[in-house]
Image 1 (cartoon, rainbow, N blue to C red):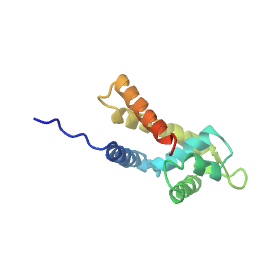
Image 2: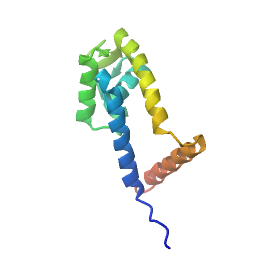
Image 3: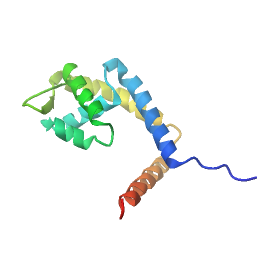
Image 4: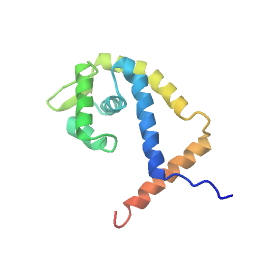
Length: 141
């Protein structure tokens, strides 16, 4: 009996990302956030005064520009962030408090996503993916 063929890694990566987004969007929905808006909030938390252009550049692998721009608008209209200067973002005091509340939900999401996966298995998966990225960055990339 022949061993079962392994599915292509790209297929699995796309399905994993779609599942992560679907479940995280559901988790964050009660806060009127999406996974991408949450990523924007974390960038703003990390670097107060970050510009829209910097957010778009840093998160460009996570989403396209229209999706990121809409996420930035969501954080502004939701009162999570404000503009201390044109084109800059900062967490509001309310946004800081609400982001702390969201953290418990994100922690539960992360726990669920790695259920049954040992730290060693997780580490191996991360190292393999990092190696694939490096391989594809090489000459001719």
